[in-house]
Length: 386
Length: 88
Image (tube, rainbow over all chains, first blue to last red; front, side, top):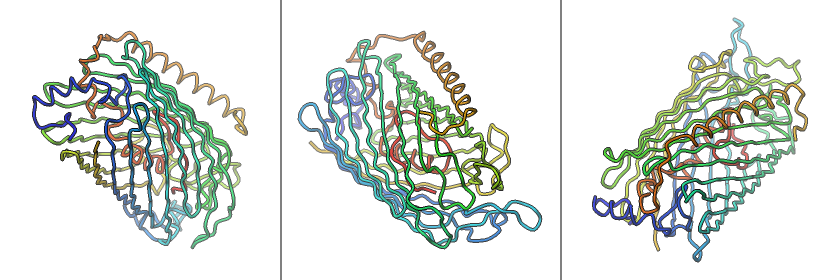
C-alpha cells in the first residue's frame, strides 16, 4: 500500500515527510530516484462518436467511429539507478467517417459518408529505460505502431536536471518518427500507395517550485514533418508536403491544505505553417478523500481553420481539404477521474464528454457540417509490489 | 529545415516563432519575478502528491492526448511528439 494514500491522517502527515526521501520522489524539482515498486497495470477504454446529424448527410451511414482500446504495462526498478518499462496497446476501431463534402439540391453543403464498414486494428509496443542520478534523470523510449494501413517507428530521448537547490527543473526531449502509409481498399476507392512521412520534434521547458504548495512550468515544443500528410480516406484532400508546428505550454499546480485538494491549470498555445492557431485551457480540481481521489476537469479548445480548408473543397487550388478537423470551431470537454486506493492495488475510473461547435470558437470561419461529439470511458487497475 | 514550405509560410512561421518566443520570455521573466520561497527537501510532501504532478497518470494522459490529436488540428505540448497513426 502506498502510505501517501493511507486512510490515517497521521500516517499521511508522517509519510509526506518521508516522501521527501529519494526513494519516494517522482515529481518535478525533487531529487531523482527510480520507482520504489514494480507496477503492473491494465486499462480498457471505449471511445464512441455520436451519430452525425442526418440533416447534414447527403449519402451514407450516419453512425461514426467506435474504438476499443486495451493497454497493458509493466514498469520496474533495476538496481539503484535504472528503471525499465514495457507498454503494449491494442486499438480496434469500427464505423464510418466523412468521405467528402458536396452540395445538395438546394446548394447546401452535406457530407457523403464512407459507409459503416471500416474496421482496423492497431498494435503499439513501446520499450523505455531511464537512468537516475542525484540531480536528474534521462530516458530513452522506442515504440512501434502497426495497423492494416499505417506503420510508425519512433524513438525519443528526454532528460531532466535540477538546479537552484532542486527547486528548478529543466527538461528537454527530442524525438523522431518514420511512418509508412499503405491505405487499404474498401467500400470507397483509395488512390494512394506506399507513402512515407518523417517527423522530428523537440521540447525545452522549465518548472519552478514557488512554495511548499505551488509549482509552475513553461515549455516550448517544435515539430517538423515532411512527407505524405493528406488523409488517403478523404476524396478531396491534398495537403502540403511539410508541416511546422509550435506549441507553447504552461501549467500551474497548487495544493490547498485546508481543503485537502489540488488545483490544476494548464494552457497551450499552438500555431502551425498551415495557418492553424489554437488555444487550449484545462482546469482540474483533485479532491482527496480517505482512500480515493476524485478529479473533475473542464477543457476548452478553439482553433482557427487551415488556409486551404473549405467547407466544399476547391479542387483547382494547389492545396485543398474539406476535413472538419481543419475548420474553425470550439470544443468543450467535461470529465472526471476517480482513483481508489486498495492497498497494493489502485483502481481508476474515468469518463469524459466532448462537444464541438463552430459557434463556440474564438475565430471566424464557415461551419463544417461534420464536427464530432464523443464519449470516452476508461477503467484501469494497477498492482504495485516490491 | 523548411523543406518545401513556401516563402509566405516561412514568413508566417518566423513571425509566430518570434511572437511565441516573446510570450515565453515574458512568462519566464514574470516567473522569475514571482515570490519564490525557499522550500527545504523535508518540506515538499504536498508537492510529492500524485495530484501535484504535471501528469497524474502518464499513460492515461497519453491516451487522452492521442484522442484529442486524432480529432483536432493541434498537436504537441509538454514534450516531444511521438509516432503517428492512421486515425481518421
